[in-house]
Length: 291
Image 1 (cartoon, helix red, strand yellow):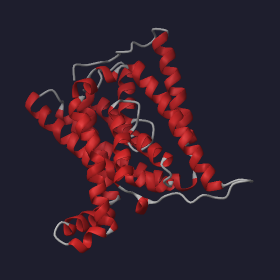
Image 2 (cartoon, helix red, strand yellow):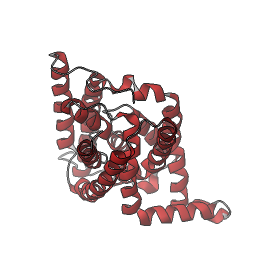
Image 3 (cartoon, helix red, strand yellow):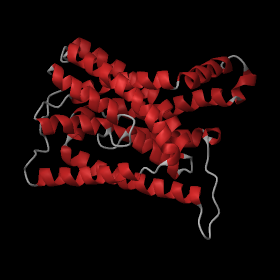
């Protein structure tokens, strides 16, 4: 991997990680369109450490408060009813599905799941799901001629059942094209949560999953020696800087705006991808590498 490739891929990772359009799909597609080798699942997981570091910094006050309350609840029964302590447990519970499936489906994630036809399908299908979820949220928020405005749930309403559903939605993002934020936000909106609550829990839930995945891939890469460390670290740093700016923008965007621009983009990109593959302009395995 060249330094130029790492710069572009780091930029793509930072721009797309927190938007509901799938960073793993865009890394895969960027390489395919540019005629580069697929950066691979290991590169994706490692560069996600950069974007997840941006989450740690942006939500540092929430994280410190949650971790502190959770730790105190281990020895202090009175703290176990505290919302922040419960959030700590709910993040752990919500991380179980992706942890189990990530290990179980490791070979598929690094191989068959990176087929461009599957990516096109998930881009379109999850785009439609996000559109439906967004429409339902907008209807509740606006009410209507014959409907009263409906209050949607906040994170204080989050329980074990909903936490696990969020976790299952996050695990779907193991397939490129689904989008971690897109799947969890859609799940949250369909369960009746506000846009801000769905996005906030999505970002918090991603922390243990992404850091664990990155650490796992770092270990494998160190032992296997199949990662270009200089360019990969450079891409990770780029992803961190760009990712932080995107989080700040996105959290403001969702308070007043619809997700429909992302829905339209996903569907159009999926259709374009099907056309390119169907006309043999692009191979479904374009740019694939053993990694």
